[in-house]
Length: 215
Picture (tube, rainbow, N blue to C red):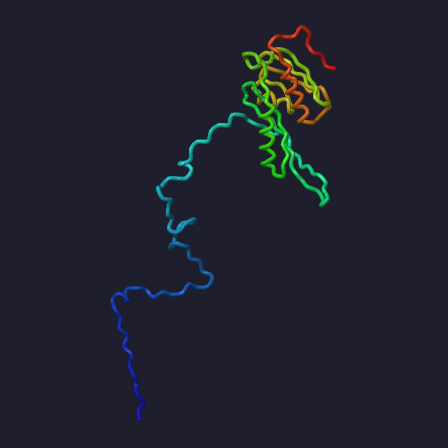
């Protein structure tokens, strides 16, 4: 008996003949998302709805009323029953450059929170300075705070001649045409800044009959 032979007939449609045979990608090959040659950062390079950038829709940021400068930042610790707890201490000077300035101190477990506390403390202890029409001081002053001693005197057409924390306080107060000197070996910027604030608070619009002398 002869074995039965069957013949398979393949029917090929025009659509199937036109479509290329899909082959699996070889191992190790890379195909970008969104098709061949698609740009990075998205599928097919689609833009945001509206066609405008996010930065264009933002409102302009308002300028702060007071400028601030950080004097120093320290990491401090305290001993408790379970060990040591660390925090950050920040000394900061804030002013509006129009005759108002203050020094603040803040301490917290986070640097950002410590800076915010120091800024609020500086605004709380801000003082109004008696200045002349050209934003100078009417007379020479001398003041001390702890071991820091500061002397400030007016100088015509000199600008601002000062250093260390004294310059920071005078700049944020908007004072110019003065010369300042630190008459002490102290390097503590916080004490120097507070001595400068104390000297500016003692200013009078009328020159005293006897200028203060360094002791």
